[in-house]
Length: 425
Image 1 (cartoon, rainbow, N blue to C red):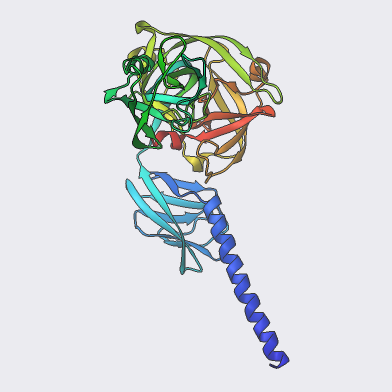
Image 2 (image 1 turned 90 degrees about the horizontal axis):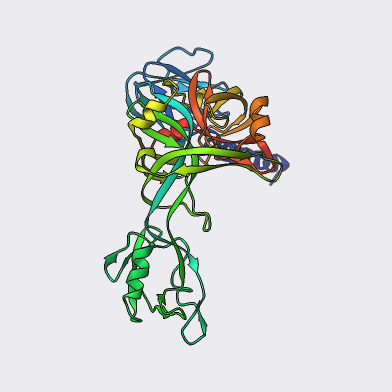
């Protein structure tokens, strides 16, 4: 092989390696920086603050979604390659596809574009008491029992697991812990058949209860049938549906999202606030008033993006705010914004700074990094405290998200969720 041939071979190799890395980097960028799904308000041009890497084109597959960019590329252009923010125009409501291709040939990603009517919601910031009833009896863990012979045994070890839900015992449905205790004692020492839900699957488990030293029969499992706490309502839409928290409610012992049958909202009174400090998040403490006259709504779902349901007339009459437009993720930008909260005893807006926006965050409730800058709120709470999760975030007159988490090492900072992730439920 001559020197010229070797040089040619090396250059060809460099070309293919460069091509491979260009494609790989473009793919990684698009997976992490470009969202899988976008929302457009019908008949309005929307600007999306992600740019296209070299060699990548954006192509609309429908005349209903018109592409452009911030430099006013002529309307009707259906193939776009630019290093500037992308704009889209939705001509009519519906769901459409926009494709991303490398060199106009290799399909790299599909984006679902939902064109919707303008949305409005009332940002609340109201603290409420939350009660959730689990769907089945949740197993927290197993434990040891001293039997009637004085021996220490653990009958459920390796059989029941944390996060299991006991739905039936010997065919009898279990509504609460008392039902479980009664059913196990009624067996008189005979094996019981448990119908258990584990990871969405139903299984039947046979288990021998132990006759304990106190004269009762026990399975040797710690269980829970409900959970409760204080959180903040983010919004109420024009139909009376609400979203709250911006994250799901997990069991305090297992850390698993509680699978619920239903739940309720109740009036609450904040009694005190422990300010946050480095390494120790603050917390709001209060009392929940349970009773027929203090009920504020029904909870229908507990998800990773929050709890959802409907409020009653009592809650609606107490709302002090007006409905405002909903802002989608493309409306969110770094800079000044406000969170609405009732931590002082009255609903007020407090200034924050949005420091980072992750338009394609894999963690749906961590799309924004925010920092409290309002001196009044800093003096009152030290920043973000437990119980403020769900406080609505407002920017440029639009409801864009909700507070979800506080940074452990800096209580002035935390995460926020895009409101569209909550409204999708």
